[in-house]
Image (cartoon, rainbow, N blue to C red; front, side, top):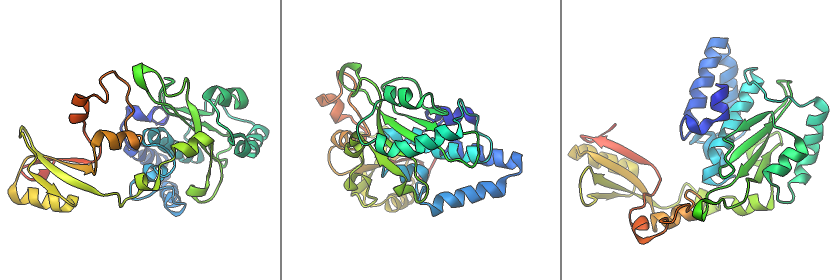
Length: 290
């Protein structure tokens, strides 16, 4: 469990591994009631939406920074339940100083190096050490009643395998108790990178397109997933039902931060023409989802 919380991206694109492992830990530990209370707490604080904790974070951070940030919420639960192994436990004085200073400290842009130089090594490092990928650094004490103060850092590949920044930059810090949307302070870069209302709106217009296996052309376009599934079931077709945003799939993915050009061929005519939308897709066999 502690390994998953440190390298969540190795175990899946969403938070299912954390949910399964923490519930299993609760069962072994005789703490299922406490685990359920923690899940209820996520809902009550709006830290979890219909699409989970990752859905709540999608209002806060770019799409490629969500995985590590999401794991930090489950790490905080593990800490409260006594399961998290800390790399470094802050003293009570260090923790209170960090909590008191961090809101003002993020009023200007900060880098990973500055975070380490100012606050020292974290209690928990979530994500890899590659400087071109996002990561979350969490700080807390050995007291299980203390929350995690989580600093969310971002970087991405740009052209010629170089980063957008020389090293990860701080976007936001989760440090306030209470409702999840009010728990954050942002750096200027974090405000620039925060998803727009259009990007995070569940009402963003999309269509669902069906493409049969080995077929040259798509054979169905539907306004909703349900209508697409109903049609596929009626005709017992096999293929992929994929969600598409309006507009060019490549351009939309870049604008929403779901894809960052990193190789010479990215953005060329052939690459754009073959680009996948990167949204939801359902594999169907004889009209039924696999």
